[in-house]
Image 1 (cartoon, rainbow over the protein chains, first blue to last red):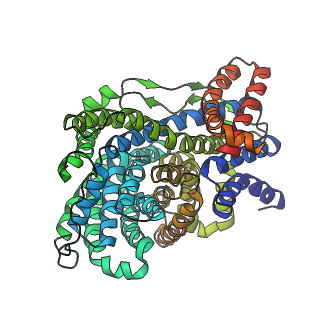
Image 2: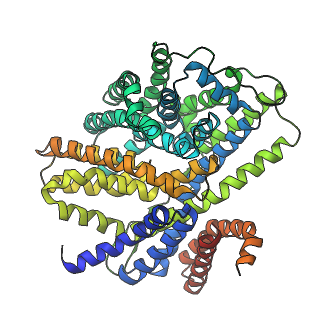
Image 3: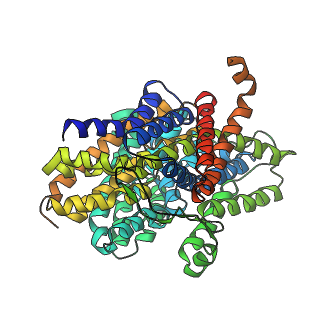
Length: 522
Length: 57
C-alpha cells in the first residue's frame, strides 16, 4: 500500500477509532461517542473522499430508515419488558431458574446462552439482550455481567436467527445458492456455539466456572450445533436458529437433572412480588409464551407472514456518486414492514400480555403511566446512540470509506487473507450493529477477493457471516440496548471492553479455520 | 453554561433525538428537489443536534 493510500486508509478508519477510544478509553456513552464519530466521518467524507451535501443528505436519510427499523424493535422490547416487570414477574422468573438449578454458571448458560439464542431465533436485533439482561440482573448478577453474557451468548445464532435474514442477505448480494453456502457457514457457526458457551461462563467465573460447566456446554452445544447444521444444510436455514434454540432449551432442562447441576436443597426458594397476589412461574412466563405463540406462526406460516408484511414503508434513492468516482446505485432504502416487523410482533405481545396480567390483578393503579415513563427514560438515550452511529456508518459506506478499509486489509494480508476474512465481517457488524448489513456491505467484496486469490468462496463467505455474527456482540448499538435495560445507560464503555476481548479471540479462531480450510478453491 | 445543560438536560436530549430523526426527512426532500441552500441549512441543524447529543446524550 502506498503512503498516500495508507494515510487515506487511516483517515477512513478515524471515525471508528474515535468511537472506540471515547467508549473504551474515556468511558463515554454510546450517544456521545456516536455523535463524535458522526462529526469525524462527516469531516473526513467531505475533505478527503469527495462527498457533497447531496450525498450526505441521502446518507442521513438512509441511516434514519435503518435506525427506525432497529428502534421499532428496541422500543417495543422495552415496552414488553416494562409490562412484565411492572407485575413483579421478572422476580418470579429469576426465582424459577434458581429452582431449576442453583448452579450460577449453569443459570447463566440457560438464560444467557440458550434462551438468548432462542430469542434471537424468533425476534432478532437487540431483543435477546433487552430481555435477558434484566432477568439476570433480577437474579442478582452484576449489571456488567447481565449485559455482557447475553450479548456474547446469543451471537452464534445471529446469522440464522430472525428467519436467517443475515444469511438471506448474503445469498442475495453474492447470487450464490444457500445450499452451496450453508455447509461451511454452519460448521463455523457450530464452532462458535461452543466458544460462546465457554465465554459466557468465563465472564462470570473464569476457568474454574468453565471446568464446572464443561459437561453442560458440550452436551447442549452439540445438540444446538447439530440441529442448526442439519436444518441449514437441508434447505431449512430460515428455521435453523429458531429450532436450534428451542431444542437447546429442552436439552438444558434435561441436563439440569444431572447430579452435578441439580438444585441444592433449600436454595432457590420461590420469591414472589413484594406486594399483590402470588404468581406461579408459568403465569410469570405468560408474556414470553405469548411472544413465541405470536412470533413463530407469524414467521413460519407463509400466507400469514406475507399478509403481515403487505404494508412496507421505504423511500427511493437516486444514483449518487462522490467526486472521486465512488458510485452508490439507485434503489430503495431499508424497508419497514409496519405490521409484520419484529417490533410490531413485540407490540402485539405487549398488549396481549398486559391484558393477561391485568385480568389477574397484577397491576397497581397508574401502571400504564409508569410503563411509558420507564420506556421513554431508557429509550431516548439508546436511540440517540443508535441513530448517530448508524448515520456515521452510512456516511462511511456511501462515501467509499468502508470499501477502502476492506480493500486495504485484503491488500496488506495478501495470501493470508483468510485470516482476516472473519475480521472484516466483524468490523461491518461492529459499525452497523447488524450481521445483515455487514453481509450486504462486505460479502460481494469477500467473494471477489476469494475468486482472485483462488481461495474457497464458501469458506471465505462462511468466515464473513460468522465474523458478522460474532461482531454483533461488539456492536455499540446492541450494547446500548442492554445497558439501557439494566440501568447502565452512559456506561457502555466497560461492557464493550469486556465483550471486545472475547469477540476478538473468537474472530481470530474463525480466521485460523478459514486459513486452514480456505486455501484451495472449494 | 454547565448549569444551563444541567437544568435543561432532559429537554435538550429529547430535542436532540427528535432532530436526529426528523431532520433527515426534510434533508431527503430538499435534496430530491435540488434545494441546495436548504440542504446546507438542514445539515447544519443536524450537526447542532449531534453537538447537543455530545453534550447531554
